[in-house]
Image (cartoon, rainbow, N blue to C red; front, side, top):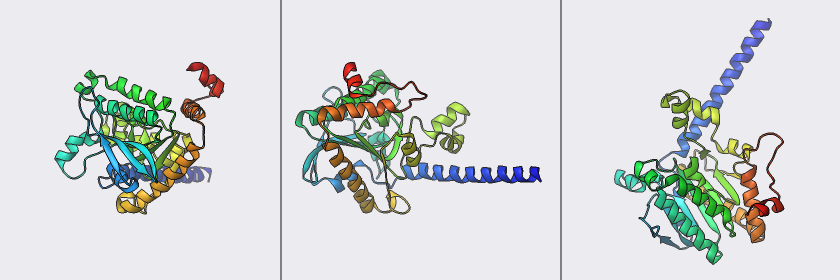
Amino acid sequence: MVRVTDEVRRLRRRFQERGEESQIWDAVLLARHTSRPYTLDYVGGLFSDFYELHGDRAFADDPAIVAGIGTYHGRPVVCVGNQKGRDTVEERIRRNFGMARPEGYRKAIRAFELADRLGFPVLTFVDTPGAYPGVGAEERGQAGMIASSILAMARLEVPVIATVIGEGGSGGALALAVGDRVLMQENAIYSVISPEGCASILWKDAAQARKAAYAFRPTAASCLDLGVIDAVVAEPSGGAHKDHERAIRLVDVAISAALDEVLALAPRDRRLARRAKFRRMGVWGTAEPDTTASGLAAER
């Protein structure tokens, strides 16, 4: 009798795990859906006007990242986001599937510095498999530019609201996601590595991506539980690709509420709180870093 009970429990647990694995993989597929709203869709739906900035004033313009100034609910803001190509193969290649090169992050930094100088809040939209790993990008200092973008965001005194709207892959995503509030759509994913990359490392087989996704759980609910994000934004039934207009409205409500909350803080307190928030991530055990205002101020 005991053996039968143990077997039933084992089978029930296995059934539940398979159900969770399917739900997580469904989120991965929805996050990558080619009909999801992209950054420019949100720009068109949220801003009454938008003036795009081009180039990094050093090497080239990177179409994988869109940056510019717009008006959001009557308030001037700076917007930066990844842009995947949608309509044609040529467009996707031109946008490099949303994978930015160093010049893209340099353009983002230019926009961040402009926002700080003018006192405009920053809104970012994250949707990338990761930073482009090509030889040319590495030769031009890809890792260094990602680090520079993270540092630039950490130093901003203006409000920063980041929203993960699709894929949030590795440092390429984090480079645009150091925000006072990090929002994430219900079916978006956010992780240090792609499921395929993780599977290739652990099992030497990218086909095990589904298994890898279940292991590290890149979903919005899991990211919220871990404290990586601050809020989950609901999507229309079936996913954001089913109803762009409603998806944009839901993101609008979330961003507006988060921005009002962050605007209430003094600039210096806002920056210290942002840095403290990211320093708390990944802390294990009792030896936590000093995230008090005095402790962080001493590091500056």
